[in-house]
Length: 274
Image (cartoon, rainbow, N blue to C red; front, top):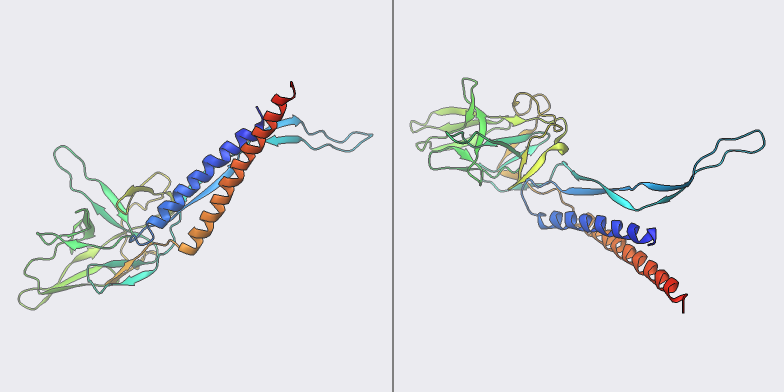
């Protein structure tokens, strides 16, 4: 069989993966805290027909002759750039301006361990006990007044509350006095692109993400500031995605043409015996 047919097949598979990623980006264009994906390709191994030769006393050097055998998937990257900010005026909608992620977690039980996730989606709520949770019911991780890491709670008797840019959560008690409920903490990563998507706008830590040993206070150690009353939206650029979609479609069509042309050549070879 012709090598070009297998090259065309590899190209079709890779462009199909690229279209899958583009489709996911477009589907999440309005998802809070979503980070778009990007596909890169690499050339596959090449078949060497003649090797390289060095120069001799009578002639110069000769380059190697190699025939490429198609392409392969290089990487599917998470692009962790800042998304645009949408004003909602909801005090529990929190946007991060800068580097870092919110940490949310489930509680440990007798049968299961606590699981910690990381997210840029800041649409939080208060549950029936006054704890700050996300849409999945996972608790927002913070720090109390004694420096202990844990959940953040606003009592039912609070008349109002506010969240400062450094993550400090204040509320007015039933006596009209201001009280500090704690401080939201952020996770800092040296390589946020190394995080693993877990669905529901959540990420899991991986050995390549470079998570700092301790959660950091907002606006310190290069961490982001928190903007209350706003949400960070997706960083998907529709014009860019549509351009990449057209490029992927044309690349897929070109690879199908390679297979069609190779098939026509094989048909000509078969017809030689007539």
